[in-house]
Length: 123
Image (tube, rainbow, N blue to C red; front, side):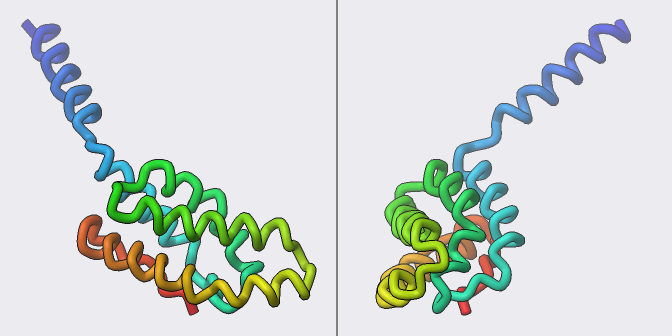
């Protein structure tokens, strides 16, 4: 009898773990991202390399509402990483920050509304 109770408990716990939706998984990943994105300066393209790995992961798992916005952020971060410390290239990239900032604002609004996660604002 005890074994049957333990088996039932284990199965119920396993079912609960697999019941996590894609949106919930995205929200959990987003909360982790929020902690690592503190201090990213929207006016400094080189700062975007700090969030590139997390942004790529979130782009893959993002719901349709923000998938393109994550694509914009990832694309910009990849360009910034490629530019490295090339001041001319970074200056050229800085002209794109308006588009990236708008995409990021959409992400932040969705994060707050759908995930109850406050993503740090880009300075």
